[in-house]
Structure formats: C-alpha cells, structure tokens
Image (cartoon, rainbow, N blue to C red):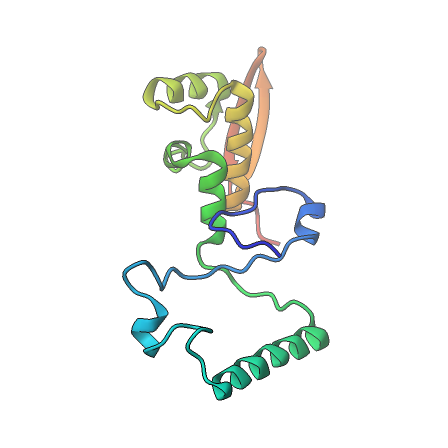
Length: 162
C-alpha cells in the first residue's frame, strides 16, 4: 500500500491489474484539523471505548474485503488529475481547443504549439504525439492517423456507439 498526494502513472492492462486507487477529498488542512471537528486528536486522545469502536470498524472493513474483494467506485477527479500530471496543464489547455472531426497536420500543430506555449515537458514531436494519444484516451476520443505526401495528419473523433 502506498499513500501519496500524486497519481501513480502507468499504462496497460498489467498496470491496471496491479493497482487500486482511492481518491480522497482535501477536507482537512493545516487550518482545519480533526480536533476542530471532534474536540480531540485522533489516536492520542481516544478512550478505551473509542479504540474499541475503531478496531471494530477496521475488522468489519477486513470482513467486507475478504467476502467481496476490492469494491470499485466512481472517482470524481482522479482521471483528470492523472492526465494533467502526465501531459501538463499547458498541453491539456492546448488540447482542449482541438476541434473534433477536423484534420490537423501533426508537424504544423506541433510547431504552432511550441510558438504559443513555453512548455518544458513537450521536448519532441514524438512526445507531442504521445500526449495527443493520451489526451484522446482521456476524453474517450478515437485518434485517426493518416498520411499524405509524406505528411502525418490526425483527427479526433467520437467513437461510434454500438
């Protein structure tokens, strides 16, 4: 088990099969602590009854896990946090302006991006293309790649529903 304030980046089925992420809301901070809500510090100021209640809750959680396994839930911001961490805010904002069903020249769009954004994450045409793929996957778009006269083009399209 790992606790972190960052998303654990990875791709592919092997990564997905070995990870179960749980997203928490930032309710507590340096200004608002559990003592403000409960009048005591967690663990340090607990009575025997509070410890028993905590232990009972933990054992019930273990029982649920043993009987049902990991329970999937719908995250709220995790996917967006992951894509932002992966491609950076500058690229994400740029990609948000790419229109669906419009054909773009990859090289031209890459050069336009470099002119407009002072971005140290996008270091090559290949990185730019990988980020386009990552963004398309995040949005649920199909990325259609084509070639014409040695030029590479792409288009984002919504996948057809079955």
